Each structure stands twice: as structure tokens, then as C-alpha cells.
Image (cartoon, rainbow, N blue to C red; front, side, top):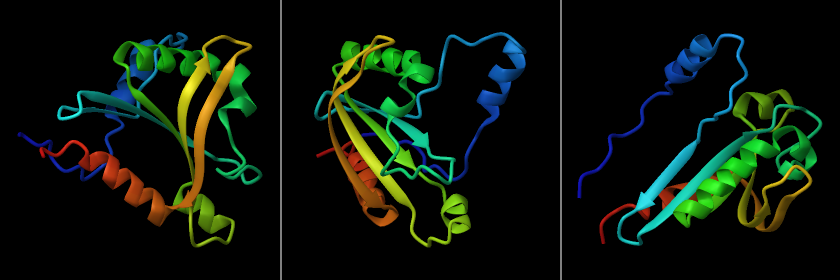
Length: 153
């Protein structure tokens, strides 16, 4: 099996291009943070990372239901894609190292939400999920294990 290259740096050039091209126009699209197809399982996985920027809400306390009215279209579109692909769907609330350090914490917090049911309407929301709070070490283990599902058996 052919493998993808190792990711060594971030590339935000495509987002900058989209912003430049759309100028002041409202966008009706969005980016998908991470999508996998595991050939041996014939299974798709979609992951959306949700950065917690505010000092008052940490990942454990943040949830898409807190701001559903603002971003429901993105979650609804993601859910439609999940349904078409028969995919697993994860939302990952996280704080970056800079934010954690400013708050006097050495360890970052993560909340991994596996969404199993969602009502893709403005008044809807996530109806069923499996959620767990973790630190970076445990998140990294989970993410590496998920990534490694793509290896040939």
C-alpha cells in the first residue's frame, strides 16, 4: 500500500486564497479539518477540530450546543456528508499550548466527541454522542491509533 507523506508543517495558503478570492462575499462552504478512508475497513472518518479560544470556556465545558445557533449550518453540512459516506464523525474541542500556558497550565485539555446522532436543523443539535475528556498525551494516543487504522494489515 502507498503511504502519504509525513506532515511536517502547516499550510494555510489555501484558506488565504479562498479569503482573497471571495473578498467580502459570504462563503457557503467550509473546510474539513481531517478526513480518512480506511481501505481495509471500507470506512470513512471525519474529524472537525473546535478550538476553544476563550479563557472562560475550556474544552471540557465547551460543546457545539453552546453555539449551535451561530454554526448550525456547518455542523448540518458535515452531518450530511457523514451520512452520505456512512462515516464515523468526531468533534474535538481543544486548547492550544499558548492558551493553556497563559492560564498557568502545563497540560492542554481535549474533549473528543463521537457524534452518533444529529438533527441538522437550526433548532436541532447533537442528539446522541460519546464524549470523553482527556489531556494531550491521551489525545495523541487516540489520534495515532485512529491514523494507524489506515495501515495495511
